[in-house]
Amino acid sequence: MYDGQVARVGFIGLGVMGRPMALNLVRAGARLLVWNRTPARCEPLRAAGAEVAAGPGEVFARAGTVILMLADETAVDSVLGRGTPDFAERVTARTVVHMGTTSPEFSRALEADVRAAGGRYVEAPVSGSRGPAEAGRLVAMLAGDEEAVAAVRPLLGSVCHEAFVCGTVPDALLMKLSVNLFLITLATGLTEAFHFAGRQGLDRRRFLEILDAGPMASGVSRTKGAKLLAGDFGVQAAARDVLKNNRLIAEAARKADLASPLLDVCHALFDETVALGHGDADMVAVLHAIEARTDGER
Image: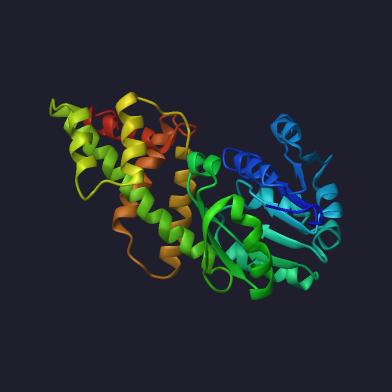
């Protein structure tokens, strides 16, 4: 919880993940000032007690710490005014908390620019999808200057049930990519097994019950298995975002001369999923790409 003397916090980016994260902050008592490119997304925050800024410049002008939960590197640079005279004005004497997923190289360069302009920078990507975000059960990975990390960590208590310090930038993002590699291959393997059982004429509900009763059961298998059984492709983690993560991990692997054979198969499948028109569906929509291969539509 926050007391009435706490400094104002800015939050930019109210998408699938950002909006529930910001709501948890304001409900915990944070003095939150928010902005989103699509103004309607700010209204639930306004109703919950947050202030709504007219633009990103106002957020930086009025908040000492600004959390960014943005879709990509272009969006981050845009709200920071990076490459323009606005950048130094926005980040000087501010703490920028980068919670989205971008390339490690981008984050490393951004930290250097923020610090050169007299600001502080914390990398804080999270593991989890919309459900954990709504429940305040995300897992944060933190990197940056020790003092800045220590100052930011308590702020994330209403958003994340665990926060792990991972060292210097960009080690938090590299850790996030490592975690996502496992998630992507796990969820894709579950979807392929579900497809196999169904096409063999088996009771897919019984398949999931057996999986749930054994050592391979997990939060991912339970959540995604239920969605597969119901034919529910409502987004928790969008296939388009999974493809982006796939690309980031693959690029990092190539730059380090690392093999990533399982990831590479998943990369192709999610590319096909998006090409089939399911980019905005949940990641279990990779089922459509697997089905298309089975049916010879590829």
